[in-house]
Amino acid sequence: MVKDIPASNTQMPRLVLRYYLILTIFLWIIVTLPFWVPFAASSSTPVLALFVALYAHQVAVWLWMCLRAWIYLNRIIKTMGGKWSENAGIAMDGCEVENVGVDDGASKSADGPEMYHIVVLPVYQEPLDVIEMTIQTLAEQTVHERIIVVLGMEEKTPARESMEHALNKTHGTVFYKLIYSVHPSGLPNEVPGKCSNENWALKVALEELYEGQVPQFHAEHMYQSVSGSMLDPTMITVTSCDADTIFPSMYFEYLERDRPRSKCPHQCIWQAPIFYTWGMPPFYVRVTGLFRPFMQMGWIIPHKIQNNGIYSCMLELCLLKVANGCGFFFEPSYQMEDVHFMVDCQIATGGHTELRPIYLPLIAGPTCGATTWMQIQEWAKQAQRWTIGAAETFHYIIVGGLLTNRIRFFVLLRYIIKFVHLHLVILNASGIVVLLGTSFPPWFLELSGKTGYDPPWFIPTVLGLTGGSYLIFFIMFLVDARIRRLLGSKAVSIWVNLWHLLLTPFVVLGYNLVSFWAIQALSVQGKKVCIHIPAFKGSLAKLASLDEAPADRTSTEEISII
Image 1: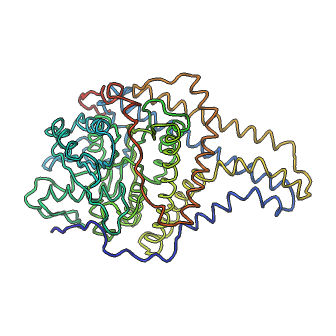
Image 2 (image 1 turned 90 degrees about the vertical axis):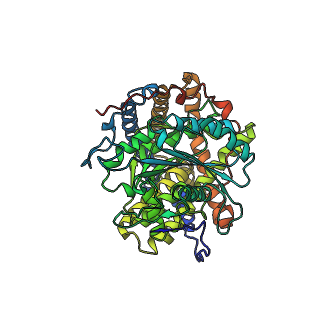
Image 3 (image 1 turned 90 degrees about the horizontal axis):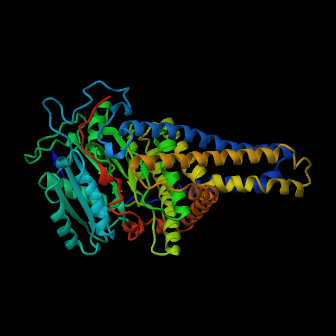
């Protein structure tokens, strides 16, 4: 049984309330605590203890993050055998093994079909050499002959024909299929960006693979033979990536090895930490690029909060979303595809979607710009896009999850708490509250006429917590040094690391301020700011060439399972 999947909804639901305003209200309450609590409290000690406790909470969260990130990194190193150049020797004990009940080493069952891998690579105006670098790492995969690369171009993508010609010439016979899709501009109810591009590209790929039709998900996971195709929909993965992604050569073989370890692989999303180790960008870009994989390894992936940017799932999960009324492979009316995809899958599966870790590193390009001012703008634009996308997704969690009762209440409540704590507290308010909460309350307590506004324990405690923060940042830089050694990237001098370490708190504060501003812009302007402005990639080729890329030094030795 088959059916066509529409490009977009013909009628969007009318939105009466903007539920992300709840985040705005909570954010203002948290950020203004240092200004009104000193006047509302009856004495000084509880006020100062409150802000010390908030600072201590932040330090405790980051220390726990350090521990989890260090453990995760050790498992990556063990999985890869210590070096990127020897990365094909996968030690599969790095995977979760609690659900092993079947043969854990096959890309196919004894009498079943092989696994195939659809890779959706959205392209807008990225340079051809950057795109070729990504495709080359796909060509170096140990299972490249079973990879279907879908280059999702936009109608306005410049020089599409010459790009197709160049890629067909260099990689036309490397993969099972190399498919090109052109996403039309101006489709109704679509936001231009990665979501709409990937939704269109996957639809085009499936129509080509199954001769104009798309398989339909069934609860019993059985599919009628589609136009005589040899590809079993239950044995196909879908990977979303960016145009500047470097995959380790055994990434897709890892998926094949890990799939049998899950009880319900059709409800899984696989996520690897993404490292931004190309070249040496400005300090604020580099520090932000260190925080992202650090948080992924230490908090986001272990707590199963969300996927990020480059991730994989079974095709069945995409089909399940459509079958359960979500309507799309990727929701084209939203601009932040990764977080929204996770929430959509949770709604489609009733809260049973599993985020499974991949103990391999992915490499992506950092934000870049042709000039210093453009570099700052790109950095701020990225932070705003993530914040607005997360707030917009929170609205969808309420509308699609809470109000429809499609996820059990306490399961959804637990997820909302984790989601809000990450995006509102850690990524938005923490730096602002720490700065204001350790600076202004003693002054306001004095102005309010209260005594004991300068106790002897306050300043030493704050200094101690600040020292703890720098210890956390130091561990983060150690993680970066270890991953650079693993990837074969150029080492950073101790003086540059020290300088960047000293500036790290200011980068965190700057990121929090940009995120705070983005929430206000969304609250005032609404859907007008929910757009995906493509990141500038023109300078990436200058940051790293193929000669310097770790992917150039991969090997394809046979996998050994420890």
